Every structure is written in structure tokens, then in C-alpha cells.
Length: 108
Image (cartoon, rainbow, N blue to C red):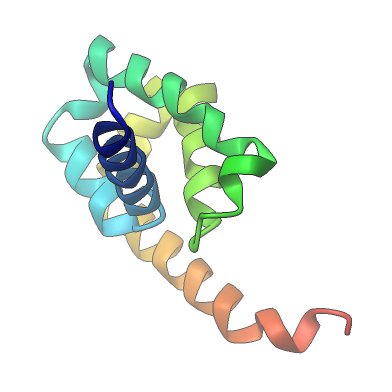
């Protein structure tokens, strides 16, 4: 793989990983059956390298790593959970309130 291909792969994988921070996108993946496919599950396992500091520093939406962990820890349960509209609403609300209060609760 040449440098341009490596850079493209890095960007594509980073963009996809960050999409996992979006509850609506997780719902889409669950509804369309991606979360049940063995090849997709293997890809999610592969993406765990983004948890290493040399990679995680590029992530703008750290919730993506949280959801990646949950999808890898309990894939069947998460696939079922993410199909439920009320679950997506709850996740979205929790994210919203986290970002709303993040700076207020962080020590200086």
C-alpha cells in the first residue's frame, strides 16, 4: 500500500468510526442488519486499534469508542437494543446532556 492509499484508508476508517457516535446511524446499522453480519462484526473488532493513544488523539467524538466497545462486548444485545426507537431517543438525549454539561462539570 502506498502513502496515498494509507492516508485514504486512515481517513475512511476514522470517518466511519466517528459515525458510530451517532445514535441515528447506529439505529440504521441495526435496522439494516449490518450488526448481525459476521464480516461487519469482524470489522468492528478490527477498529479497536483506534483506542490506542496514537490513534485516539484524532477522534473528535469520543462516544464513538464507547459505542464501539459496547458493540464488541455484546453484539447481539446491542443489535436488538439499537433497533428500538425509544433506545435511540434515550441515547441521543444522554449525549445531548453530556455535551451540554461537559464543560460545567470538568475541573480546570
